[in-house]
Length: 115
Image 1 (cartoon, rainbow, N blue to C red):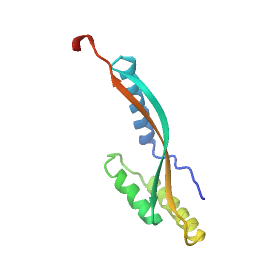
Image 2 (image 1 turned 90 degrees about the vertical axis):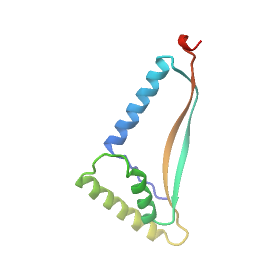
Image 3 (image 1 turned 135 degrees about the horizontal axis):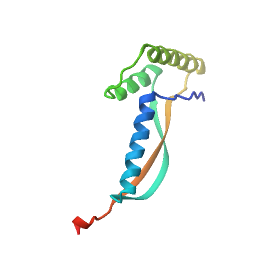
Image 4 (image 1 turned 180 degrees about the vertical axis):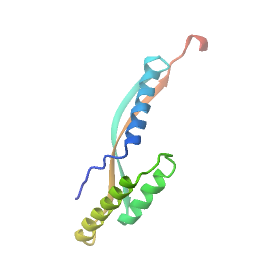
């Protein structure tokens, strides 16, 4: 197994922070109650590094955030490293991306106007 942390892009981190803030505000405002929370593993498998790269590109196509030259260069270097490791591993090696996800079940709370 080969693992390399992929920090992601700064705008992604900001998007996650803003989404978590919005959820917290909805719970604090008593619009929803947070019933259950958990974490899970999310795996994306591919038949090659190129297939994984294409999947990630398609997944990111609608983010609307610009990609700068340094980001493009860093991604190209990262995929080249992945390709070298995958080729060296030989037949039977798998390509996968692992992400850690969080999930919360929100239940709407009745407001005075709804009663």
